[in-house]
Image (tube, rainbow, N blue to C red):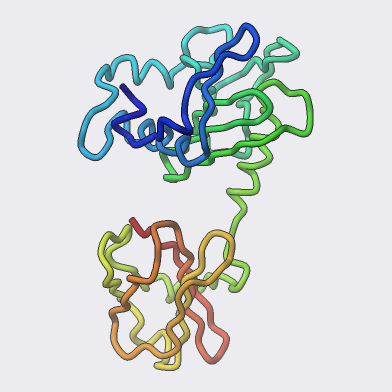
Length: 244
């Protein structure tokens, strides 16, 4: 009922018995589809798949007072304390300090994650083995989020000059192919270089000379980009762009 409407492939996502347990085997892309369904509050392509909104909200809310960081099979960040799978002892604070406080996570054995942050629009999917015997690999989860939150474009330095903050990317997020840039007048000369780099620092589009205030970004895939403006005098300014 969930797998088919959201396009999870039956040949790669299925239940299997291993010993006395039932495991759901899947691919990272299919895990991401389920994560997107959760991120969109149970709605997929305009169709409400998870129709019980009361239960949906209960899933990602504390289910009891003993371990407030646990809902219904989801780990909840930003709570007052948490109880890890082992050792079973209450620890003050949130279970993933490096992650946004609104993160909620499906954590499988040895570090399989569907980890969602509604406030940032980010979702982290992981498959693989953990480096330790942590049953839900909470420490690894926190380490990964720490790296994600510290990502920046390594090809530029963000200027903090107040007069540059008038530059705007419109629309942002953008669905179409024509990106408007406002506020460049008096900030940069015509030899400005504009680059569009992803979260790993790989640049997918460069404009060496701006002849008008509209840029065609049809070459960019969906994702988050750092748009860097670099002038001849070394002035640099970076803004984040979301490509839907």
